[in-house]
Length: 467
Image (tube, rainbow, N blue to C red):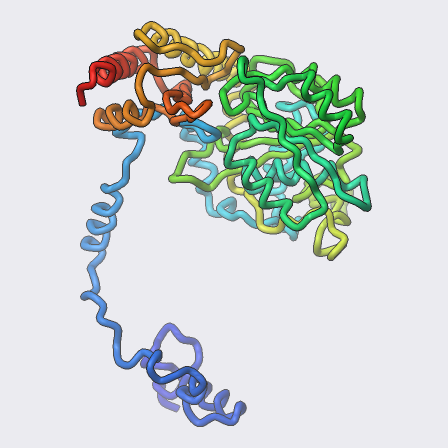
């Protein structure tokens, strides 16, 4: 038999020969490939070849892609004070070096422990590190991002009630985009979300209002965020005490760096802690990928979504890693599953693991102090500008809100001309002169002095009415 009889010479990357395809058509009672598409109207069918440009060579294609990428605005050429949940942090080179290894480069779950001890060990270490950060014993292998982690945490708190609507109290100082995702997540479910606004004077949760709401609604849980959407540190201990008084599950959406400065939330009695893990060694990357972490106390373990890695014994009696507590998951419990995460953020969890390990305990403390120091330094510089003042006087970490003597959008446009992303514009009480500013360790004090000068000049020109 000649070679062309067994190899499809018209489509060399298609595994079936012409003879094999003809045999398949005949088994369906068809004579030609066109018979497969008889039901498709003739006027919508493609006739002839697409008018595509000439193919590019390797060097030409590389130059074309580089030109397209050159249209992007990156933090190599721009300074950014954006935050609102996602932040610019330095990522040690070791994180990329390990995460880019082929054996780790996947988001999928290692179902075969015999072949996946390396990745399983990394995920087990991830669970240990997050557990240490938040001081809670049970941690899953990852959620998709901080917002879905909060939605999953809220649903966990609903599982003890089998019938009727579940009432959840949600702090309005959780990120707006996260609140929208939570609302979407519970559309069509027997869950009623009740929102409590922040105190207008200090930007924090009003404990007396919260207690009144607990008495009126008897909620399953209360979800709040610290630092909140204004960058302020909530009184977590007082909130937890109030939750315990009324038998309400406490859920905290938490910045993991805070554990470098303060007592971890688990030690304060928080039941479920979750949050965004992007700041743990994951670059900004135009909006993703990200990582959600989720930790809880033992009573909520059976409701925890996602994979759990534990230490078991192999057939020789040696310690080994494997997925455990799989009775919660959809491939075992089917429609009764309390976990419905399949492909997950294992690669991002690996990055977080390497990042935390590279910092160590002392490194995390130093990093947290550096973030707070730089943010407070920049805040003082901005407050020295005429007409600029901090809106809320409560304690903050690395993000704060200032009130401007001009429109925030106008200032942001002026700063952008100088390649500075000045922050996130906020509208408060119908006035659009507030700005949320985030500062991290990547800004030196010299950088901040230079940026503050740019803020000062732009504000003075806008106040004078000059473009």
